[in-house]
Length: 350
View 1 (cartoon, rainbow, N blue to C red):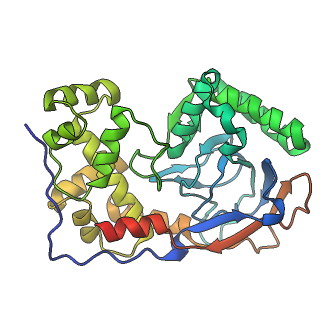
View 2 (cartoon, rainbow, N blue to C red):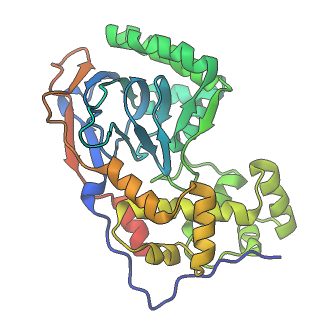
View 3 (cartoon, rainbow, N blue to C red):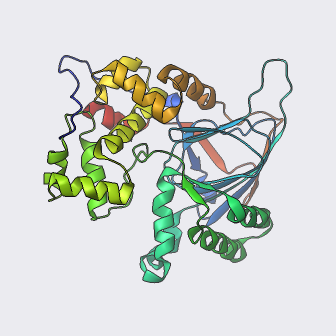
C-alpha cells in the first residue's frame, strides 16, 4: 500500500524568514585563513558558543563542565569527556546553564577546526575510502565513544602544543583513528543538515534527495520508486535492507527533522510548521514528534532557545586560547550574524 502524507493547504501563507540572530555564522579572520588546522583551548564560565555554523569541520572535546549540547536536531546533556565531530555548515551550540543563584561550574574544552579540502585530490584515492565515508557521515555529526574516544582525547591536547606540519600529521593520525573505528554513532537526523552531502549517484542518495525536495508534498512510495527506476516492492525491500526502516518511518524521520529546524529558526507556530512539512493531522504530528524527539514541539523549541541565545564572546571571565602558527590568540574570530540563505530558500519553496 502506498504511503501518503498530504500536502499543505494552498491557502496557507509562506512561513516567515528565519530570524538571522537565531544562527550565527562563525567565520575565521582572513589574517589566519591560511592556517591548515586551528586549535582552541576554551576555559571559563561558558563556552561562548551560541547556535552557529561554519564551513570547517570541527572536532570538539569537552574536558569538564557544561550542561547541554545541541547538534542539528539532537539535544544531549554534556558529560566530561564528550567527544564529537561536526561537519561543515551543521548547526550546533553548547551551553552551561544553572538555576539562578547557583554558581556555574567552569568549563574546559578543546576545539580543532580544519577544512576537509586541505587534503585535495588525495581524498579521491581508493586508499582513503574510509576517510571519505567518515567525512560524509560527519555531515550529520558523529558521537565518539569507547576506547576510540579515550585514545583521541589523549591526543587532542598535543595539537595545542604543535605547529605547522607536526600539527597536520597529528590531525591525520587522529582522523585515521576515527575513520577506522566502530565506536561512532550519528547524532543529527539525516534530514537536518543545511546542505546535501557530497554528490553521490547511488540509489540511496537519489531517494533521499527526491524525498527532501518534495518533503511538503504528497509522497507515495510508487512515485519515489519511479524516480529511481525501481518497483514499489523492490524499493520497500531496498530501504529495509539499507536503512532497516520502512518507507513511512524514513519519511516521518525526514519530515520531523525539517520540523526541528524550523522550530529553531523561525517564529512560525507549531501548527504552521507541521502543515508546511506535510502533516495535516496534528494528532499524528504530535505522536510522531514525541516518538522521535521524546518531548513535545513546544518543549523542543524552548530548549533550542536556551541553547541558541546569541551571546557574543565579550566576557572577560572566559578565555579562548587559539593555537596557531602566525597570529595573536585574540584575533582569530569574526563573529557575525548572517541569515541562513539555504533555510530561506527552503521556506520560499514550501
